[in-house]
Image (cartoon, rainbow, N blue to C red; front, top):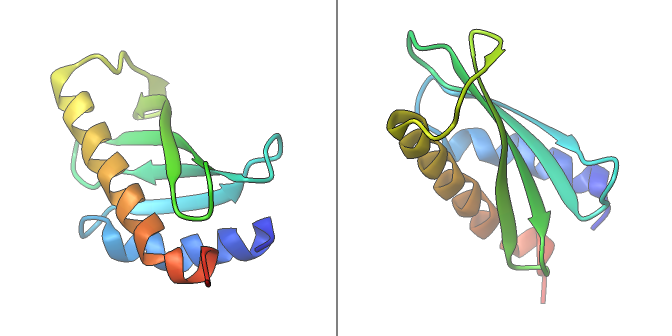
Length: 108
């Protein structure tokens, strides 16, 4: 599957795995053809946004890394307990999306 098709599939699927009100933007990772960049704007008054790198280890497994966390456009320390909990939650949603897309990424 090429990267453009992968981005399209993720754009259609990831919002269905996120919490109501969260917004996601998925882009191809220009440095890695097997990876995506995922930006999530958390719903709520705290105005957090999260950037993740999601790389396919193989056709079924992804590695998700937190790249950056911002609050109202300013980078914040992601070691805060609230941010860690949100980041873990989004990482789980990203893995759920990858599982849903296995029929596309691993058609065997």
